[in-house]
Image (cartoon, rainbow, N blue to C red; front, side):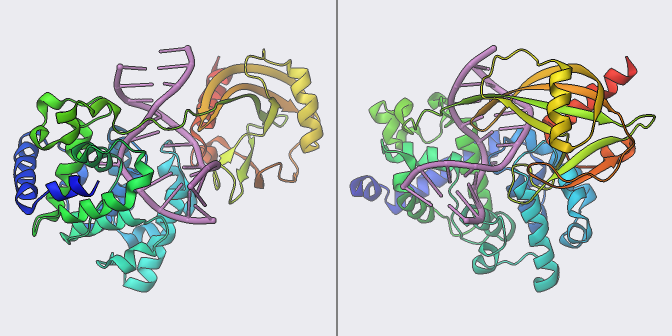
Length: 373
DNA sequence: AATCCGTGGGC
DNA sequence: TGCCCAAGGAT
């Protein structure tokens, strides 16, 4: 391993950077966060891009920056609205931490993004990668980065057939050793772009500007690097969600997930874990209403099965049956149910603005179609 | 160190 | 279709 690192002389690194930048100037994508060096915009884009594909993040980035153009605007907004702008991106903790960090930046840094690693790394949601990305992309400071694209690229360049996690420290040092003296940000955009467009899981080596410097290419190892990791074990379950409607009232009962829960801070229909099997037929509306009545202490009549959908949440594959049911009595205060810290009856104009899990938002659309039809 | 956190694109 | 995985961070 030491030998592969030693092969990367200063001269080879300079050649690598030269070829890389030449390729990048011809093949770079026109992405919105590449049109700015505003550290706030860079920061927002980096958080959105964590575990998220570029194509997904673009529209969110533009909407978010239009509504929250700077740290002060973000810090002044209610968390719930920030989460609504994040809806559909997933990993909602990122949005909450971005918001918390913006408040720290306003309170402790006068609303300006810090330009020192020690100040960035202590912000919630900012780790080693994100701090390095902000420093290099926005401030052109020589801080290394290592993420999915660069990790895959560097493992192949070095020809290391090892699980990525075991050599992270070495890869960080390699990343640092590659840094140019200037235009650090452009270099980082370029290495990530090469990893993203060429050195993918199934690489396009014939298009690669640095294949002659790649040990994996020379040894025919590109398809076995990075090494496969553990096969995920899926858990199949069946859930039930219900839209509860009080008599002669168009409001809807929603609960908010508590901090620490999945979808913390988001609103959702009452849900029941129905069974631990996947391919179960939709239970009868009567069964569902009876179970739900017990759970929330409210008598339910006139249940109707609306639709069933499949979705997955990390390792869970969920079959979700959705019902609409009228309650026997007018709304009254209800105790929060499992996982939630607040329960409310809300008008449609309000639930449009409340942040919800993506699939629950789809159920809202199904409910509207159900009412219309 | 191993797990958790969400969603949608791509194949 | 079913499955992999993406500009990671926190615990």
